[in-house]
Length: 100
Image (cartoon, rainbow, N blue to C red):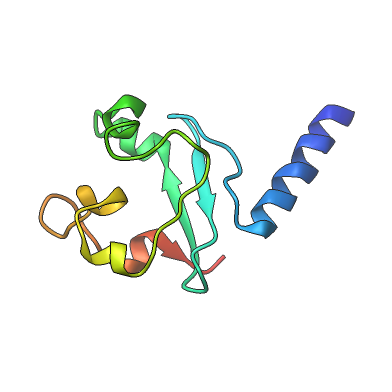
């Protein structure tokens, strides 16, 4: 029980800092979102579409647990926007950025 509590406290602390909380294809990632609302990457949703981790890691993303994107990246075919370009897959702000 003590370990579960410690993990919860660590997860909340990381969340508050805008860092990734946890990551696998069956869980979600939570990023800071720079004031636009937290960005949630749902590994389960991507897996349900037939994607596996290696489809994006290392080809599109480094395997580090940190996402550094600029506003300019939102208009280039980089990172999430390699697929989320409005043609292949949606690129509506509200579907990723959420006020939590």
